[in-house]
Image (cartoon, rainbow, N blue to C red):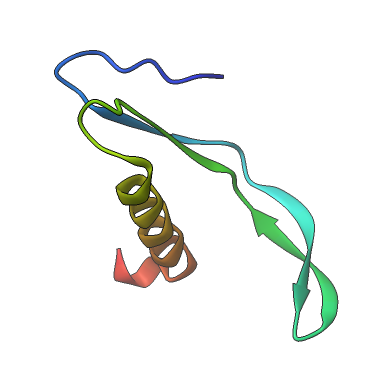
Amino acid sequence: MTGIIYPPQVAILGFGRVVTRPWVVDGRIETRPLVTVSLAADHRVTDGHIGGLYLAAVGRLLQEPDKL
């Protein structure tokens, strides 16, 4: 799925469904619930660097939901 940005919006954040996948933790493979997050943005307004910083912040907050 591709997000459609309608003016005056400049970006849209999309979340996939939570799925259990293998993940390496302390050198061991464990299963963890993971979600895919995507960001579509109008590059006339912003750039990929700021979008990457935003996605990293969202990821940190999702790992500690009590801070939301």
